[in-house]
Length: 182
Image 1 (tube, rainbow, N blue to C red):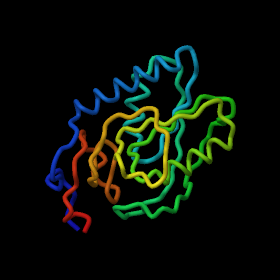
Image 2 (cartoon, rainbow, N blue to C red):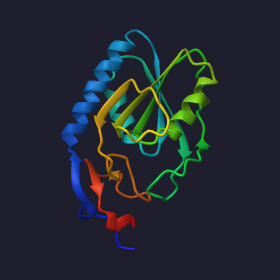
Image 3 (cartoon, rainbow, N blue to C red):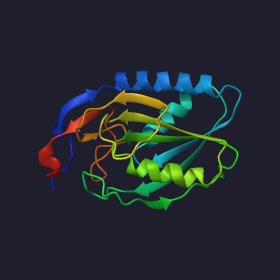
């Protein structure tokens, strides 16, 4: 296998500036919505870690962070539909405001599973913040209050999103050339 490079990117969809504008907008909205209240941000590892780090820094208020790791893709380019929790939360969520921070809302299968799982733990409220939303791709209906950017139906990498654990370090989000994963 050849080493992954930015030459594998067919097109840059969202520049670093586009991403930071979206993060700033979402951070401002969350700050206003939760003024005077503590919020628990739950990052879905690994893809959302960059987005959550940036988002947490721009929220003006009391923020706690925690992480969950789930798997529904493995090394494939499409979800398998089977969700496994690999790492659960360290913090209790009962009676707390929880925002699940996702990298991309695609089929919605993983997120639906996570919402049901966390809702069963009796949070005071639960919302979703996603950096990217693939409109029309949802196989299940998911209420998403905070949407960063609308994403076309392409296989995207960068800014935390990966293919086979590569490309997370790109400062932008781009379309991965099909030759890499086909």
